[in-house]
Image 1 (cartoon, rainbow, N blue to C red):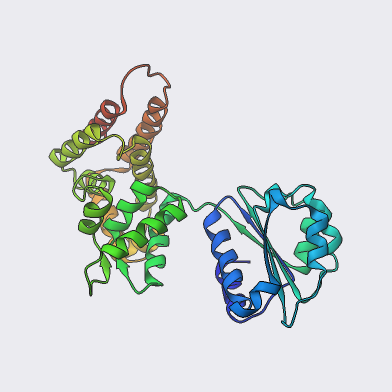
Image 2 (cartoon, rainbow, N blue to C red):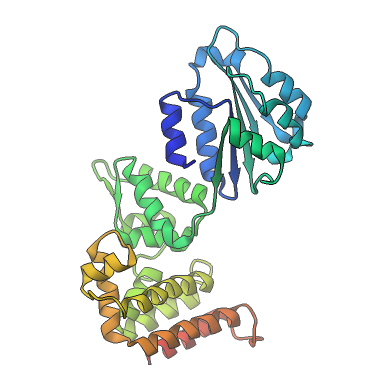
Length: 334
């Protein structure tokens, strides 16, 4: 079941007796867990009917006995087991889950992995409860996540600024939301959009020298600007890791390969072909088609793979990332 659907069920008080929230992405697991803690019952009922436990400090028998008890002057009792992956003999919970108490809501917060789907416990939770699997979001989807997170708070962000945050923070959603929440504090009163200037002032990412601007310079074949950014990256390697730059470029040129065979090569047509949100996002691809033919694009993708390997030490003993990037960018633009 999706994150949004479970949120909707919690808001509408449609509860299952057991929830297994599991996966490699802790952000969604923790968000749903906190929503259960704050929403199942009013604060005055929580002292007697809400219990939060941790897997390493709990045993399965204790948890089963607690789950089989009845709420005190309340419709439900809520039991949250955080770090459920550390619960010893977790498979014993099958004894309870096959016949759960309707008045108990048991939430298993299982992070950094998944419960073995071959086990009977998994099958019983599937039958009598609800399972949510929280997978890591690939980096190319992070700008969309940032947009949606801000939209829910009545704020906006432009494409460049969203990509700046993605390049700097990667796909750690908790880290991203924490940094965004910090930016909100520094926003001038009445401002509703996070800008590149705000990010530069408060996070330290350059608004002029970043992967977004590098890609734009490559698309336009602005060799002077490409070299400027490469020099900046070489002098500031900590904030501009090569692996992130290669990821951004590989994603773009892989998508560009699709564009050569698109029937409609207008901005709007290319955006639709790639499933992008707005026609504006197709503009860079339309420009890149004019500056790079399909054969060159294939060569660039091959170069990106080669230099990714070199940055990891394959056929390269001593050349630093800054020099490798300059060499790569020269080959892309010539």
